[in-house]
Amino acid sequence: NVASDAFMTYLYMGCKGGHVIVSADDPYCHSSQNEQDNRYYALFASCPMLEPSTPEEAKEMTRVGFSISEELQSPILLRTTTRLNHVRGLVTLKKLKKPKGKGYFEKGSMLVAVPSTARVKHPILLKKLEKAEKLSEKSPFNKVIAVGKPSNRGIVTSGVSANYVKEVAEDLKLDVKILKLGMTHPLPRKMCEHFIKSCEEIVVVEELEPILENHFKIIAYDIGCNVKIYGKSTGHFSRLYEYNPDIVTEALSNVFK
Image (cartoon, rainbow, N blue to C red; front, top):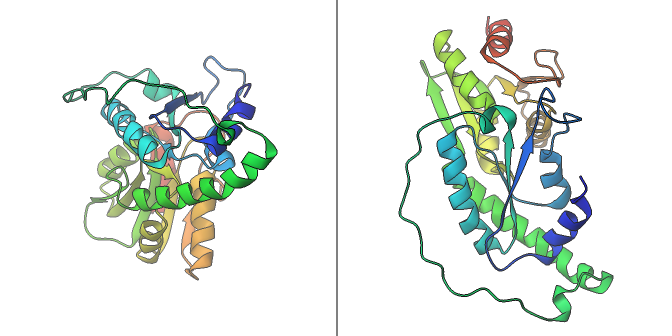
């Protein structure tokens, strides 16, 4: 929070070298004073965001995040949560890239954060976000996972909750498709629209605030799709604390009776 002013302005100014900012949320306040959902900062500042669900994804998203950052000339937010930060798992290491060159600091009026510069930079930032959405559409971190037989039932999830969803769906022997989102801002709009159109009912599983849930309701409304969306607003999930397989089992069992 103390860095939010600089963070907002930083997105306007951009960066030449790759910069991945790790922000660790803390559902259940294990070591924090609040349960704030820092995904709102990505929306607030127009910052592209990645959300890993496993150690392998955390490593890979960090690597890819630097490439995206350099391509967009914008910092990238890597949003994790306590459960992911305290887990151990196998990762596949790849060959390290050699540095491209020696770093240097430019001088110039367009690198000074004053109102006249901000007015020029804001439209550029919005163009970067449009480009980021195209990257999100083809990102391997956004994918549909089929469980059981083909079905018009869907689940949307991200982060560590995706692990619980897949495990529970398999344990309950559900026929369902899971939209697992790893690049969650900007969302892959076309992919989300296609998923919504293919479903009669959707459950959104995300810890803390109903950010994905609200986005999917807006998209469904925009495309005139009368799909039923379950989540926090329907009382199936809470805005409080961490989730676990038992919580997800109860919710999915109640929806997919």
